[in-house]
Image 1: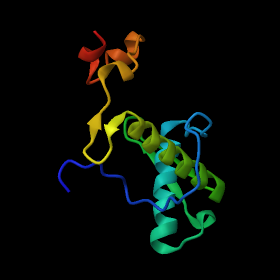
Image 2: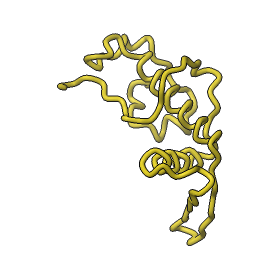
Image 3: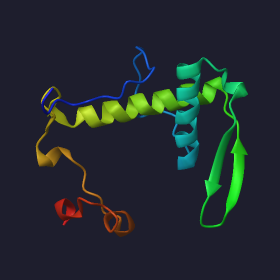
Image 4: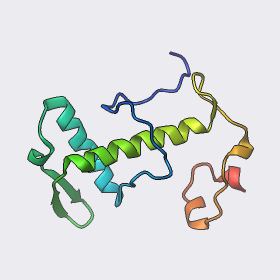
Length: 124
């Protein structure tokens, strides 16, 4: 396959969507846990209501249990589809993973974000 853009093999199908009106997964662990639930539903045919999800904070040694509903999994699928569409929209050649010209990319002004970014030299 060479350098072609790889998309995850996810149980996400067909309908069109707008990345501007997608529900966002907040906080971030909610989206991650929903992805695990989505995997369980697809892999083992388990109903979302039967899945127990646990988040454990190693720093504070605190745990929390979460449950997920089918609608939350649908929101996560929509979020992933939107993320894929966002990334593809910045490619001039999707098959060869070639980006558009640098002018097509927004430069981040927020120093808190820029200081943690691996590509901050681009915004300097």
